[in-house]
Length: 262
Image 1 (cartoon, rainbow, N blue to C red):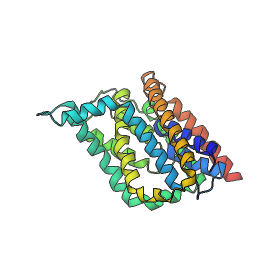
Image 2: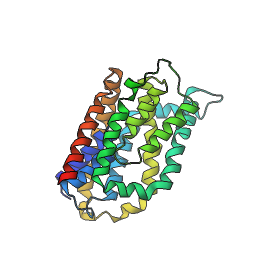
Image 3: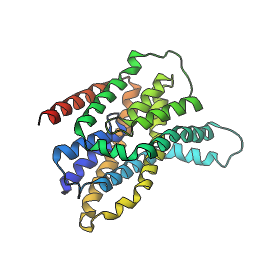
Image 4: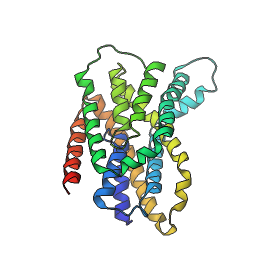
């Protein structure tokens, strides 16, 4: 893998991890389109890119996370302590389902046509808040956190956007768009961290002569990840979240036509 290829994949990962357009789907299609050698740009590189975007969300929400940690030292119940519980509840589905379908997910990644179809499905899901309007405003709770967690588990499939389906689920449940987006990003922390730890043994195969190239990709993913978080929070506050649905439908349809006819 060359330096340019590494940076391209880093940018793709950083932007698509938090933009509701599926990082796993874009990475899978990028591997197929650019025909990268799986020996030099395989699963271990994808894991490192995910770790870089984990650092991005940790940095962006550092004040929220610090407040949550401090709450553990205080007596009684408060909003930050409840958030810890909500994150725990929301993470359970992806842990359980992830262990059950891990091998099948990796098989789907190698099928660009199926990934393209799942990208189209993401696009349709992003339109749901417009088609199914919930006029009742609800606060985040245990029930809604669990439901959002099941939607996050859907994003184990490459082509289904984790941020897209979790934010959509939150809005369908009556959670404010901004709160749904913030919870989605915080929910990404245990999901990405858990996935990284589970596959940590696969990182040992990184060739020493590729270290600088891998590091460049991680840096690109980190910077663009920060930008993506900022953009999503801004766009969702302006009611432009649905625009990503058009993008997913376009990319998914284009990929479907390209890979089905080549």
